[in-house]
Amino acid sequence: MRHVTRYRVYPSQKVAGRLFTGFARCSFVRNWCLENRVYRDSCLPKLKEEYPELKEVQSKVLQNVVQQIVHNLKALRALKAKGRKVGKLRKKWVHSMIYEQTGFKLTGNRLWLSKIGEMRIELSRPVPGRIKQIVIKHTPAHKWFVAIISETPGNPEPTTGTRAVGIDLNLENFSTDTDGRVFEHPHNVRKAAQRLRRAQKKLSRAVDGSRNRRKQRVRVARIHERVENRRNDFLHKWSRYYVDRYDYIALEHLNIKPMVESLDAKLRGRPKSILDAAWYKAREFIRYKAANAGKYVHLIDPAYTTQDCFICGHREKKDLWQRTHSCPVCGYTVPRDLNAAQNILKRASVGWGTPESTLVEMGAATLPIPAVQVPVNEARISRL
Ligand SMILES: [Zn+2]
Image (cartoon, rainbow, N blue to C red; front, side, top):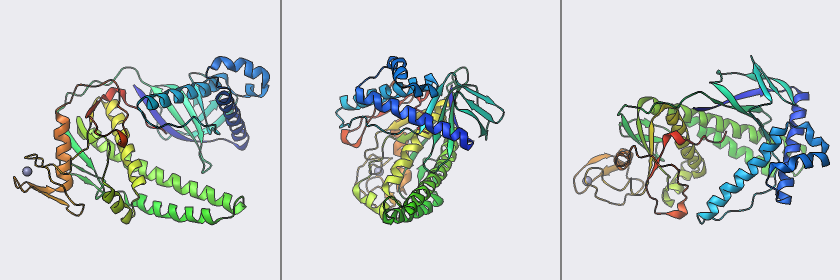
């Protein structure tokens, strides 16, 4: 079983300097490969002869840079094959390094990285199992983090429980489930988002290249990080709640809410983009937590879940202000989001337990969306 844990690290100025140099070398290799269209790490020995400064970086780290490009290209090609418009892989500056299998040592609260040195690590929780990979990263708010990817032997036993739940992610509240449990949108995220907007405005007014602008940029990045942290915190608790209590969890695959709804979201001070990102993360968090607990997640086709009547199936368009589902045919009357959650569970219960091997990559452009069964043991770990 795979685990990903994230910790803060505190490199000294000297060590940080070496890390930045490492990033520079990695960026050089990445951009050199893209420019020369070389996608094999066998180019590295020769490149090192030509540019001896590349020896300042552990060789496995550099190999990983090239492998990352190959990985990204494959992903792009897969998207293209599905008829999506994709751009080219751009050159960029990298802000992280990946240590795999070797070149690191964790003793107590000290982390040692090959060719870099030692730094303090804040081990907020113990690392589960054996460490496979360490990713060290610098954020725009000038903080350092490591993501530790570790493995414990064996896979989780599939659950034998039968508790099932359908969850509707919506605008009015963050989520409503079939047991009537409602999670509100985390208030602090909205507040921070307002602060973020103000700071961004100030940044756009600052003179280009000025000291003030640089400072403001870090300030914006800090607020951004805070929003991100608070949201993650909420989403971790939220997903934990469901994975601990239920064996079968049904969610919508995508939220394609009509335009009016996204406009409405804006009016309420919750920009759709923020919600979209949160919804996406919510699913990912539930999926990988469920995978580690041997539980089932089913993502269903979201079409008409709010319009259909759970009891008789009668379909009727609802306006956004209609917060209640009141069926003109059978008289079934419940809160709108509860009816949606019930529909989600109903749709999912048709297909539990027949896992597919691939997660179907889908966008709004590829409607209508078929229902997909997502295997819980194939969880994708969301980007850190
Ligand atoms: Zn009905």
